[in-house]
Length: 316
Image 1 (tube, rainbow, N blue to C red):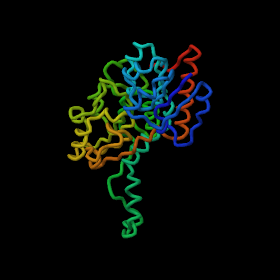
Image 2 (cartoon, helix red, strand yellow):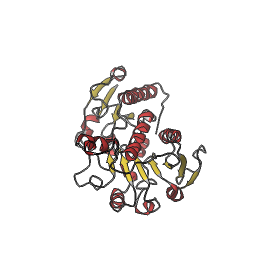
Image 3 (tube, rainbow, N blue to C red):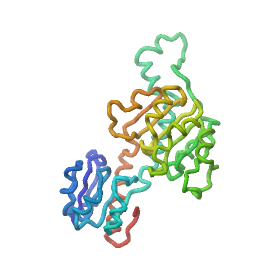
Image 4 (cartoon, helix red, strand yellow):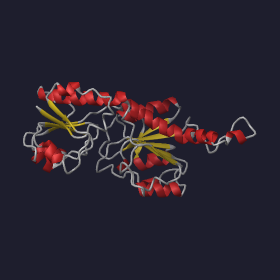
């Protein structure tokens, strides 16, 4: 079997074990692939793996032997799934591989908004503490999460993990009801989105990017936020209208935003959030703990193995 990995570099920082994949066929690993060379690299492949490289109908048509597409991620919006289905090509993703670390990152971002650890460390190193006449100082408002309300948008595995950690802080949890997902569990109280937002001290995004959730946070929904509310996003940048959010941050109509994802990655120099106040950004690293990446690779290889055995798993 001819197996092509279009963009191994995001997954592999030189610390991944690809030997299980090599056991399934002849493997060609590319660090990355541009739109111009995707078709050429896929042309003889029977199985293709991609993290973020776009695989559209034209690329599929140029690969007459292609039977399997493995997404090296949970999100699969880089693959034209409908076109694959029409051509009898199985598409599999890797759900759940990074639940722990994404949840950890969400909580780390939230705590940074509340504790301002980085800012205080910088203040000490610049000599500010040394100039104080007391044993303690703080250079901005600090927030105790106990008794506060967390609204989770997207109550899948990661959203639930975040909710359970937040409960240990003494937070109250509300699940925002999304259209078309009315029967999604009952572990936590559910409210319609706008009603939930109006009660939130913290809002955390964990839903998939769909046509229904694209820019679910925008000028209209932001008006329901308390001025003291915090927002975190470790899901997808396009869940937010970033220009609207930047305006609300500049106007002090929302207290803070922390995200590991943006609509454009890496962001252009004129990205509206780069200079917004009370905004913390990390470079989409919430999936990248070594343990998470190796788990992802192992499941992706298992997906192909199960497909070859006639028992495909994680089919999207």
